[in-house]
Length: 191
Image 1: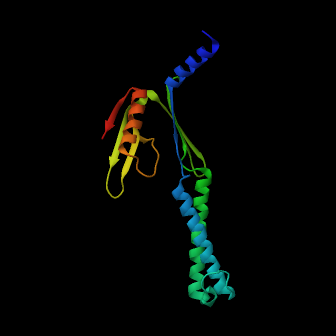
Image 2: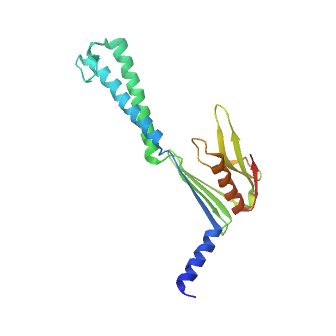
Image 3: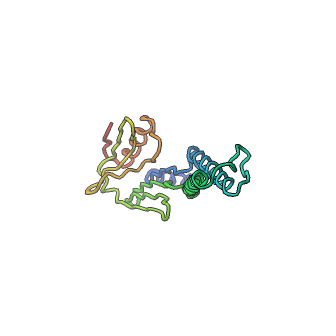
């Protein structure tokens, strides 16, 4: 056997012993749209407030310089400031890709490693694979739907490991749960 075939065979064996899932974070189109709208709206309200204070039109639309500053201009300035601060928060979440991370099931080391990006620090959890009792699929329909994959762990609460956000299609959820359960050789619960 050549060295190339030996190395590719060992890579396949290693890949059979390690399962890695990448989790998407807050870099979604909807977050970009919300942050953009908040930025534009916040700047617009602030410019309207400045226009009413200085008596000059800083906005090309309307005539905000005719607004009375004390009740209307001041309130518009507060709305603009609130929207602008919220936009900064959204852009910060997008910048750090809040919630993104990796689920790494490593049979070589016998450890499940979860890592997620947090706002001020990264969150990393390591759990021995032996403590995982089952893979649980949670589905709740209605006003606030929930579809997630979680792990049942001995002596602890269920640990959710799927992405937060819009609900996944049931087929994708089942496939993800089945893949993890098959890899860990544990039961699949739920649905």
